[in-house]
Image: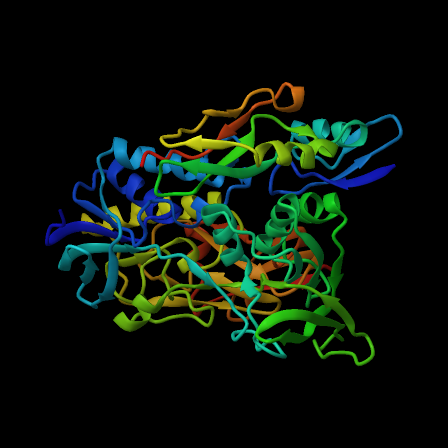
Length: 419
Length: 114
């Protein structure tokens, strides 16, 4: 049963959506609906059967399905309404939601919206993979879905492009299920996965990792993948001729990055960042008042524990919004990624902000012995020493409200090698 | 002196172990235990899926209830792949009791009721 009015509608019933709904209910938000397109809550964690989840959220090591069950049990316990098999087809700037399922079409008015629609995988087209397009070229997450949910092994001789965590996890999973994983090629001169996954997914099984390498050709026969060629790249990511290595294989797995799944926000007219996540202020509110966002649809997180932490925080801002307690947001300071910074969140700090703010950012490339510097235009306000930062690990730095009050023009964040 | 990356949690500490098994670089006590275990008798938790019947789903996820010797991973996978469970199944249900006499069970990690 879907009503026509809610205080809060959560779009997407994965870990971010459930954690946000749970926290909002605990804060006293009564009328909540979670809309989920699949026939189960939990999102991508359903297929993440490996362990390593929950160490900060639940203080124990859980598998993906166990982690999501902790959340869905709480959704049930708190009697939070949810609908499955239901797709949101559009979102309007006045917070009207159009949704559809097998029973019909719904027009839902929400006082506040939390958009938690996760992310999707970059595919062969997105990275302009050279060569042919035979069957057997699949993204790592698709292979994970086939194997862990449907019980099909995608191939017997597998090469993996990209050292992101899903690719590493799948290297181990496919090996344990009897496939031969020939190697992993990574364009960057460093791995983009967690260190622990390099050890327990590659080194444990003697799977070679080729850094500064990419796939330079894909070759099929009658529409079926037969071989791939990898080549070394120079510092400008250009292929170095003469470094080709050819592998006979039936599967090429792509683990080459994730993109926020934000078309609903884009079509509603919300401003998006270069990363495809929404531009948000310190309350994780998009450029549409009352529409909030968290989790991987905002920026791709390293760990689900960080997703749920972010979403719980945003629930507090949603509660303030619903209580008309939020501060003046008519003007704001821009937060600008400076030297060495890939992206930084939040994108704006409103003038009326009275909270401390945790800035989340990633560096562009690994850097050791550095200072993270916060500047008001050119004037330094704060500097923090870090022994090492790497792109695959999100960094969080807190600025107090007193520190934030010193900024007048903008907030520029940069990293600088310590001299 | 041996160097290794801790795999106990996603933090991935860089550990150093000297000849007398003194561990440094660990953020928490589990890192020390991991380093000693890794250099004497490495163990891993195995996660996988087993066949499921009487359900709209064909697979349910499982894990070893504790870490098992690293060299037994493939043997344990062989046992896991022989199992078929019937829905409903719940977290903690035993899919395989005392697998290969290792003193460890293979347990279900997902609730499937239909």
